[in-house]
Image 1 (cartoon, rainbow, N blue to C red):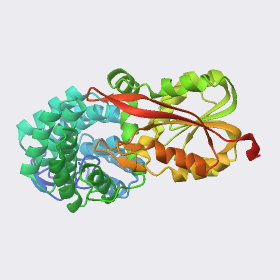
Image 2 (cartoon, rainbow, N blue to C red):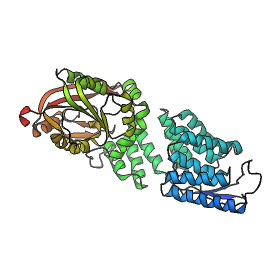
Image 3 (cartoon, one colour):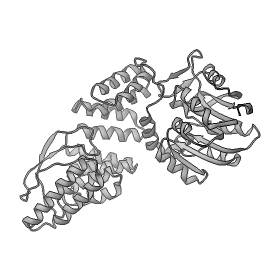
Image 4 (cartoon, one colour):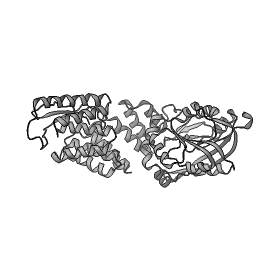
Length: 450
């Protein structure tokens, strides 16, 4: 929520217009309120100082709009140095610091505002967003509820954020009610339709989910992402060959902080152990291994003892930070797995992909790129979710995961002259208390490929 205001020395009623701030999905709705100067401002600033502060304020506004958030922050700080405590400037500084990913700094400024104006709804809204960035969801929820109680902001956006926080707390039914309230206030909030569709999809209410995704798409939501959603829940869109890259990256960046506990502890994930157990059963060591889609490094403790060199590749920078902390990878690469395989100058004698291909339907580009990266005699092993229809190559499921047929995987191996050393059917994880059937595939490039 970025504030664009008349910057006048009289401190009268000022117009607040929502602009392209970091916590807004839409803008352009005005509202009015009185401005109270901070207690430290017992005297009106000199006209020269006020004019300089005003210039810095609007420089900050323009820098923010242009995406130059560090410049915006410096401009707002300069404005505050000239006219301390001005709430409009503090609020815009807070919005900027949240966009810079510094919620702790923002919280300090927010408390400065609330010490003067405890019922400032904009400050409460930013406070809730800051707690959300810090994954302090109960505190975020309490502040969104305070914003809604104050009733001085248009309610659509606060209800949207309220619902997102309830989702983060694992309360989807209540989140759905919040999204309905957001849409009752403003039916044009595309993100509320998207989030509503996601909850309905998880509830297996596919027709309602598809309707919500269609509404979001009509309102300008990401076309690639929403066609992917619609293909998963209704089949009315052609099945895309892969999940959108930005979807996967954002999903795992957001998921990184509790990924291991949720996946292994709550979903009973075991693909990393199953894949590496059968790999060590081959009874050989490896010169150079690459862990595709390495995530937080769940496979690393099992791969490091059998590989002289271990490289990890992932699309999520947040996941790579977690993997780096393990100290088991010689090198970590932030890249798409196909791009890495196609562009690397290295040849590996072990390539692994544990629970990666649930986000890749068409595996032909992976196998094509592997031709260059896997040395003769090398092993390529991976897991895949099992498709219900063995006559299909791959399916996009309502869970947004891809499943593959054994026939398809064996066909790809044959076309690329890879021998099937082992293929094991075993569960990958649990989903809503049901074991998800999977395959663990071990392929070898013949020595004669030299």
